[in-house]
Image (tube, rainbow, N blue to C red; front, side, top):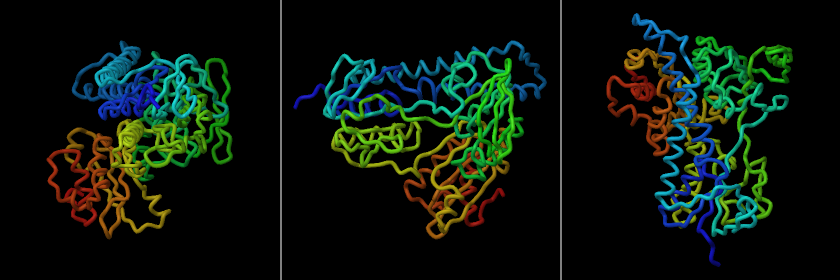
Amino acid sequence: MNFDYDIAIIGSGSGGYVAGIRAAQLKLKTVIIEKDEIGGVCLNWGCIPSKSLLNQAKIFTKIKDLEAMGLSVDRRAFDYSKVFMKSRQASERLTKGVSFLLSKNKVEVIKGTGKILNRNTVLVDNDKKITADNIIIATGSVPKELPGFKFDSENVLSSTDILNLKKLPASISILGAGAIGVEFAYLLSSFGVEVSLIEFMPSILPNVDKEVAESLLRTFRKKKINIMTGAKAVSYEKIENRLKIKLDINNTEKFVETEKILTAVGRSTNIKDIGLENAGIETENGYIKTKRYFKTNINNVYAIGDVINLPQLAHAASKAGEIAVENIAGINNEDKIKSDEIPFCVYCEPQVAGFGLTEEQAQKNNLNFRKSVYFFRANGKAVALDEIEGIVKLIYNPDTELLYGAYISGTEATELIHELLLAKKADFKISRIAEMIHAHPTISETIMEASKNIHGSAIHM
C-alpha cells in the first residue's frame, strides 16, 4: 500500500522534532503534526525559558559581590518584566532555530491537532486525513493538578503560569520539592520573594541520594527558604488578599499564609483524545505501553517521551525518538534506554545532578557497595569562585570498581555529571578516572579526588 509518508509524528517537542530530523537524515519522508508551537513544552514553556530565568537570578544574586567591592547598586529600578522578556527571547530564538532545522531537513510540519484513526491514518483538526507507514506518538505531558488545588492562573499556578508572570508576588508557597519545585524556590527567592517549599516526602528531591539532597537543603535554609518536609497540603482558602493553606504534618494541623501557590507535583501524560482506542493501542497506569524500540502493541506505532513510563526528561525523549526512527530505518544498534544511564539535573544554585542508584537504593537491594565522598570546599577552583557549597558522591562495587550511581550537588554539577556517566556507560573502573590528569584549577578535580578516595589516595582531603 502507498502511504503519504514513511513516518507521521504527533508532537514536536524534544522527542518529536529530534525524531523528525533523524528520520530525514535517514531519507524517510516525514511529517510532524503540532497543535501549538514548534519545540513543545521544553522550548516554549519549560527547559529553555526556565533556564534563562535561573541564569538571570544567579546574576541578580551577585549584586552582593559587587557591593562587597565598594560599588553601590540601586535596586529600586529592578523590573522583573524585563527578566521575563529575556526568557521569552531565548525561547523564541531556539524555536525559530528548530523550525529552520526542520525546514532544512525537509521535514513537513502541519499545524493542527492530530488524532489517530487507525494504525496508518491520522486525522488533523477533524478535517485532513494523512496516511503513514509508521506513526510516532510524542504528545508530551501537562502539569499535574493536586486535589484541592485546581489551577486557576491567579491563586494556584502551574509551572507554565509561573513562567508567564511579568510581576512577582511578595510571597509564594510551592507544593512539591522535586526538580521543578526546587528550581522555582531558588529562582523566586533570589529575586526577593518569600518562599515556602512544601514536600509530602521526608526530604526535598526525594529521588536524589539523601546525603546530596541534604547538602542542598542546608544551602536553601541559609537562603532563608522556609522548607517543610513530611507535609501534606490538604486545602486552601482565600482570606482577603491572602491564601491560607491547610497542612497535615504528622497528623498535626498547621497553616501557611501566602500570596500565591505554585503546584509542582509532577506532570501527567497528554494522551487524552488522541485516538489510542481507534488503533487498539494499550496503556497501563496512565502511560502508553511500549516494548523494544519503543514500539506499542501495534508494531508500526511507536510512543516516545513523557507519554511512556520513562523519566519525564527532554533528553530521554530525544534519545527514544532516535531509537524508534532508527528501528524504522532498519538500524538496530539500541533497543531501549537504561534508566540508570539517564542523567537527572536540577538547575538551581548550587546545581544538583545524578544518575543510577542512590545509597539508600543500594542498601535496599542488599548490594555489595561502598561510597566515596568529596566536598567542594576542598577544591581550589571552588574556593577561588566562592562556590564552596557542594559534594560529589560515588556509589560503587568495591570488587569491580564499577559505578552503581553518582550524585553531585555544587556549581556546574549538571556539566560535571557526564564524566561519571561516561564511566558508567563504558564500564570504566573508577580508578581510570583517578589516573586521568585533570587540569588545575578546575571544578572537575572534585571528580578526580572522589575517584582517588576509593583507595584513600585523595590528596586534598
